[in-house]
Length: 231
Image 1: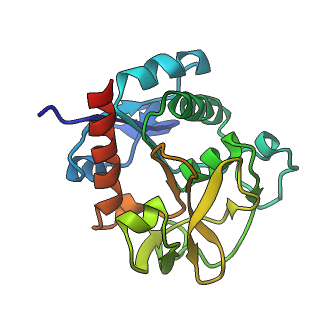
Image 2: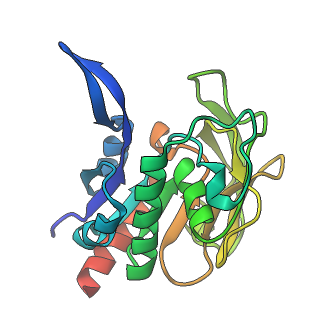
């Protein structure tokens, strides 16, 4: 059986390698490893014009929206907090268009950290622009427990409380239309969201690619394989 093709979004940043120092499409190697461990093939999806999103989504079996920069507050009608990072407008444009295309086509979708926040914003939700206690130190993942909400998609994949690697200072505030919270941190922070309907669309606030628990991505790959058969 052909392995499902999983598209993963990338950073767009300046990078150095060899003799070169120039803009580059970047993706931490943990993401491809994570998808491969889940049984999928990986396609990197660097930022493109939003008009290309539907055609790109039509070529993949599932979509992973990777972590990264803070979502620009104007996207959810807010003024920027001084602690909000600089915008990544090209990524915001591209990834919001990809999310819209995935939701419209029923393509399985996993949002990681920023990706979860973008899913919420795409559906009309808002974000808390700063909270403490969800990073280890600068450049160091934190670790804290999250508790699933019984009866949700997330709980069907990870039914017990689990320690997760985390690195974020923003989080979901008001849920977007059609989304339900499916996991919480001990401080009440929403740690996972999903669509309240049969479509496979899940966002997690932590970084599962940084850990060794592959149950979420295996669920994504299974959903991608089933969607590919239906197509």
